[in-house]
Length: 265
Image 1 (cartoon, one colour):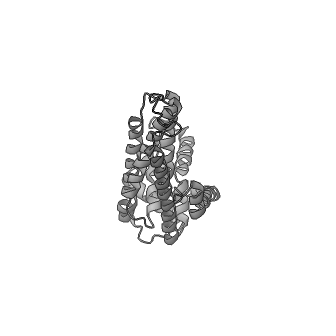
Image 2 (cartoon, rainbow, N blue to C red):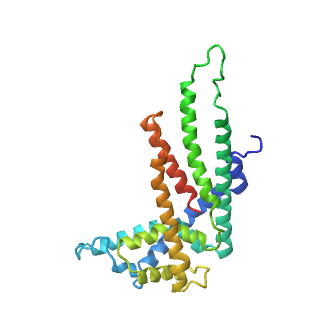
Image 3 (cartoon, rainbow, N blue to C red):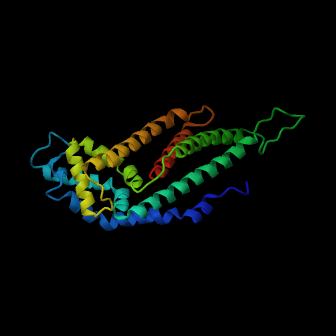
């Protein structure tokens, strides 16, 4: 086990916290600008309401809510829009490297633990039937953690090579789904993205309407669909009659939280 890294050692190696904190700072520093772009008269979002039955008097308030909801879904996107192509690629590669190595090392640690079913309760010939109930629960939990880590590690092994659009693609899935939810047309969605890219001078000169649709929107929705499908599978894949409901619920919640955090990149 001496060749395995701890989570802290991997944080020291990749420094993911500096990136995560930068995302928060960039969003905070540029939120007013983002809302200004979304609130501009040329922005198509002003034509839409979240409720088709809304009264005229409430339409202004509703539009403000839509703009702030849309802005809240662009936290990671703002960060990537401000970075250069090279920096966007480096950030994605760094975070993917960190999370892949983290999952790999933690999975190996759990595997090693599960290799020996006699930890704290070695077999004793004169009395071979004594079971350590506490460790039995520990092993049950570890097997569920092993399944969670293994599924995530297999997913990461299949990831395509990251590029300067990857961060934007992954971060914009929820945003595009929200635009669809409020009934925004495909044409207006592309126009809105163009407005955002122009407002933040995004380093992507190839970002015409067709490229936005095929190189950004479609991959973003594909990433989002895959994430949602994998989240739905968690509850059915983690189950046991050997642990109480509260512990099982926490294991499911933690598996979802882990997936949400590492699938940001």
